[in-house]
Length: 227
Length: 227
DNA sequence: TGAATGAATACTGTATACAGTATTTTTTTG
DNA sequence: CAAAAAAATACTGTATACAGTATTCATTCA
Image (cartoon, rainbow over all chains, first blue to last red; front, side, top):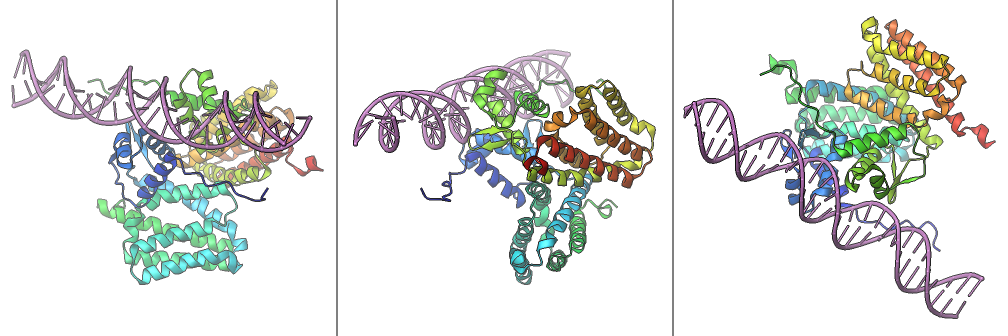
């Protein structure tokens, strides 16, 4: 018998595929808020039956990415309260998570993928490529999250980051905001390179603060829009 | 038209009912780890078809209360790593949440249900009633959680508390542990009454620490069991 | 013309049938 | 008797049919 032979990749269940497809569409902001997501309609578009669609919708709903509008599901329109609540959680968990990994990011090997993502962000910014920048931003988070040893904590971070990622297309379309974000990523990476957990947490907090503010202004939830 | 007339209670969907029933059984430790939960079997016992059962199982699984054992679902046996991870999250979110509400718990009216739950715990402890004590413990958490203004934060706290609640029957069966827990609840309540957020967070941290230790010893995950 | 009523439609909840796969048991063969 | 092969079984993934309910549209009556 051959040792350490991994089981063959079984084709992903349809429900899983539908879930991932809808999720990525949500992340890209390709599904607008308010528009109802109906089982039959989606099933037809995706070429599957209602069952896997239903499963995916309920799963997204249980994660808060969709809400059940009595009958069908819709992408929730975030209120200012929602944004405050989400960022309260992000401040809490992302600063804790990044502090957690600073102990072993002094090693360049561990930092490899983080630095790669940062470099990609720099390139995208220089090329003025908003989509590539957004991708690099996602890669940056994925890179440092991969070092967090607590999978449950990772899950929470990913979940609430996704809530905002859905709208990130809006803010990262602005080159000025990309400049600010890039500086934030740089500060976080520098703190990690120094192995300074407190500095990394502080940099993350500032970074999230800037992102929150940019979002609120972009969507017009701030007072200036009302006045 | 009659004003303020609430919509009539619609009967809960079967999937919802199955979910709640299974969840409460998990909380009470009535479903042992390792035993596979199979759709057909559960459907037959509950008198419904596989569909709602399936929905409930997937939902519990997505919340981490069950894991998919290739085919069916099982209650995961918590390793020491799991316990450490779960409590890392609990330390983080429950201290933050309790700190958040201390600002308005100086008012006795706001503290009402918290004090009630504490009183119930005292009575249960004096009566040496483990079940009632467990209930009071749950009520205490529900009471202070009801004051937390961030529903998403509440959800995270509830979710990870439930992970442990499932085993709490074990530890709270011991009168000595109940004494320790009761002191912990008292310290938290006192800090809240004083409106001292930092003290409340510290009391919560100590309380969780004691609970974690009691659990590790009760299940025999500690070194003493191995040695 | 406006409101109320009834029919038609659209959608989800639930049950069940069918297909595919892993596991176990039985049978067969050395 | 042991091992391998084959069959039976048990289970989940998916599709689809059916039922119930809410919503929308058309029709009728004042």
